Image (cartoon, rainbow, N blue to C red; front, top):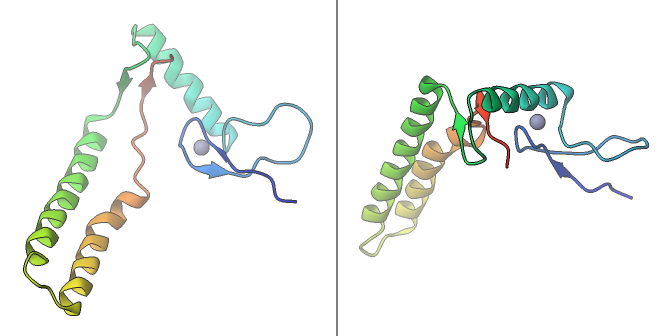
Length: 117
Ligand SMILES: [Zn+2]
């Protein structure tokens, strides 16, 4: 029998809860439980509400850059496939989109502080 996967409250990745008694874990690893605790504590100290998060400016800029690249690739593909594309055009479009999207696959915007709701 397979256990159902859970989603980590910190990083959002799915994980398989370990065996054992007690309530099911909320985090994929202990360090993520600790980081979440620290982020909530910092948020409370700064009066952040449930919709607020504090993130590193460089990390945010990097994520926004990647999103811009993906947006531009979508526009490229929309234009390239507008007029009766052949199979090679579709292949090139898929490759182009993958190149733009794959860097986002492992992207994780780790907040320094996150308000609790
Ligand atoms: Zn995690």
